[in-house]
Image: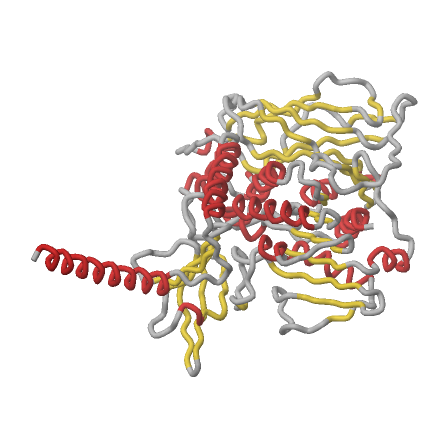
Length: 532
């Protein structure tokens, strides 16, 4: 009897286990339908934990730079007009190659010296007669005093200009708002099946009370969601689009006032005239060595004179003819990943090398993948957008969406292969977590690439300065300023090449997220120096 009772209990227990297994399997199948490869080994779980710890560590480093302030009266904010710029240890004349330090003391609208830092400053030296310019590196003492460090690269009368791009109170508001929500961009997904379509809300942070389709990459901890439409499978998601919602804001009325026209990019008065710089016998500024992969990201990284960029500490190649450019690119496989900023490079090269023929993959929409071939020269060049976050009001094929990390993983690599990437502008409207995670995963992908192909060249382009006229919550250069620090941290000592658009566009004083051809030409010349 005891054996019979035990057998019945064992049978009942087995049935329960089978039922629970079936329910769990059905739930996983229903909700976890990855659009990207999933891996779940012990190693991957451990590395996912490392991703989170790395992101948190970097967040703390950046967060400490930004004061947490919420003022109720604009008069307590930094005033460019009341602030002052001084020359440290001024001299009658300076030599080319000298280092110059300028001090900035900031005051509020009431004339009180500020006791904390965090102001978003930008500095530049220039000589208009030479069409010359260079950036200054800013040192924040976190007490209302800043030092700006310049290198005097050229001879002549040099102007020094310091701008208050945003007061610290505005920077604090942008930082807090950015990391508080996902409301600056909306996403929509189109699900398709024979004879029917359905458009639903998608995004990175949806209400979990709804029935959702979850698209995830377990290894890289990349997640994206769509509301599951009735009678559609999660696999039937075919296209996704997104658009800015600049009508939404988290700023208070006082915070909004910090972004009026007179408060943005306001020049801080200086109490000294332009300085005189001469060539001195003891300062030899000639540079012979060609710029090469592996140099660290620096600011300033060079200077512009007569619309030509001269890198600090190395030289770029010059191309006196198209034949030289053709020779450089012969046999190269060039992969560009990013946004419209690096796509400008793509279009510039196409304009110079007429033998590249387009292989039409899609309709002629700017955000669709581009692919060009030169059969005779055995050259291939492609451009592909980085995946979401990528703000584009036209639908993009979901099945072809891959992060740059996954794209790099698919490239074999060799001495003919060049990978060019930029990430930034489309991330400005999202919490900094997404940008940091994407870049860290890209670093890991590059490390894997170098293990299987150390000869592959990887070039990273930093963001450009922009117009700074509207939509500050989503497009302010303050976000790119933060991105720059994160790029410095993540890609340090990796053995990649940098084209420092952030520095170059400030030196050229273009203030346009899509700078003119004179800047693109110099950026591409820097690129070709690395490639050739």
